[in-house]
Length: 258
Image 1 (cartoon, rainbow, N blue to C red):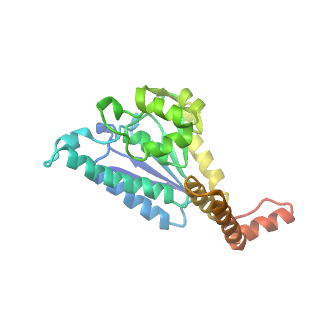
Image 2: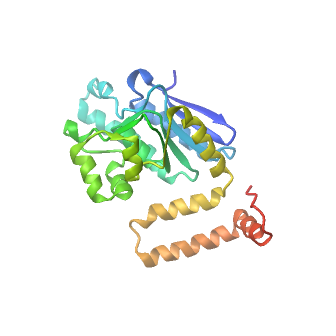
Image 3: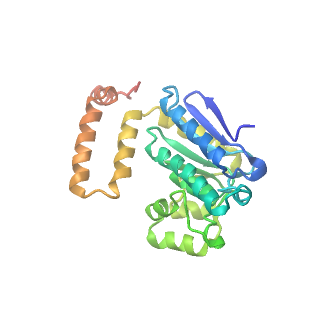
């Protein structure tokens, strides 16, 4: 069985993390396959939205420690290899020009927690839980956890999550701004499809431009960011989506993006 299963429903592509017997934990091969699917979906014009979820009752438990423990060159080499692959996935998710939803169907821990944080939006079952899990084992967060956490919840809350490593309920995750929506587990698929429909109706070019600007904004001086925004605005105005949007506004109708 493939560790990552791709399923397409109209404009929505699902990426199912598919190692339920191992709590959808990542091996080097699983991370490589996820990356290959992301590259494929980037080029597929029929796909407008991507959703990442887990098979079974868990989203992902992060790195597969049994795989790490069995590595012939020891855990240090194993973590180096695994983190390298996973971090390529995280980088691709942040550069990905289409919306990516983390559909958190169950526990997201360790690298699974970081993977969810890397996505553009997070939809969470009210029965699911989050846990960074690294520091309880004397380890450092990876998968971008130290980058995403303070940007989502602030430095103080990020340090609390890192230092205490307590379970975070769905309600708490929503209150802290870690996730966008919390729904009953039986409504999670329908909620994902609803988001996908709304996102697919909007301008993909505008989304990609704004996502890139937001990614750059953390380390860019205001004057430089303003110039990047000016250039982005001109690019979107010249694009067919921008022209359609302006025409629709002037004609008092809803835009029909290609």
